[in-house]
Image 1 (cartoon, rainbow, N blue to C red):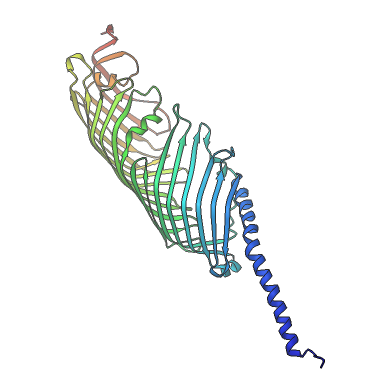
Image 2: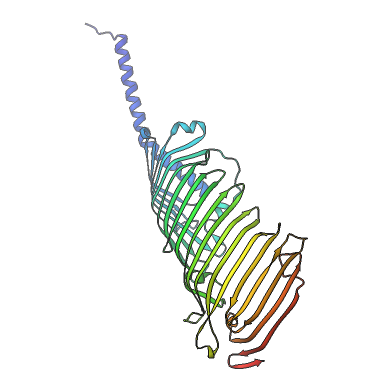
Length: 437
């Protein structure tokens, strides 16, 4: 008997063929797509950073709409050192959102990342990334529902110093929600240990583009002795020790600029003269409060600044036997702008080692209006302050002054001063040799 294919048997055969072909296509896509995607990703990152890029592997999971990138390494411009290194990146997408021009990431996890910044004499190793003009047009909206960064670190190599140093930020942990260019309800929390000091950052009302965020930055027990590396080589005094604890509230907006408020407490500061071991100035405690600091379009505004503290300055004379003399500082500024565009006030009061006082106060007015400033010194002993002068010159005497400025304020030394400046019982000596008295 001769068998004749029926319509149903032909349909089954075609379905089998289609199934085999579909399986081959899916297998090819499963194994070939990661390879193609890996090369496309390397090319794209290289086009953005202009740096050599290497990726160990890319894994695509179509059913879960997930991309896993392993071993991302972006080299620095020299091609010999690492710029960004990430062990693992996992992105879970909403693929259909791409049809609406929206890159929507449901979950992003970054593990084991390291960023290396280098400060050179002519800038940073990332300066070129900001030199090219950027377009104000946004081609693609971005949303990240949930971001987690774990086991990360960052390093700053400062090669502009006479003795290069590296500062590190370890144990970086970040968790963020609702980061988007379409909304402003994003939030994030970041913690790290930076140069040995715990740092925490809390972000609220985050919008990715145009950038908008509110931030609270807390730093505890920051080592102030690190500042000595950035002082001029001929600085008379450098910090030997000291701690700073601060809280800073920041509002950053692409249109309105930066608005900040903050408080800082500085404790146990010791300043020494270069080449000496014993402190010349001790600052047990100094507090500072900044209110309504704004910066926008090259205009600086300061609603208020309050500084209060005390210091002890070593008596440099042989008869002083290394005793420390007490001094206090109290300063207040209000409604100050630079350039000066509206009236402001200035009030600085300080007691000076040896029993003298300093008082600077007055009002600041925008030109061509007249600003009025007055500086008064009463019996200021010059001996402790002569130690701030490099070299072996010794100056002694008592200064008295009452100076006034009554003219439009300009960014330069005032052209006219009224009042008097006098030094009583003046003596100048070079080492042990007296020059004048």
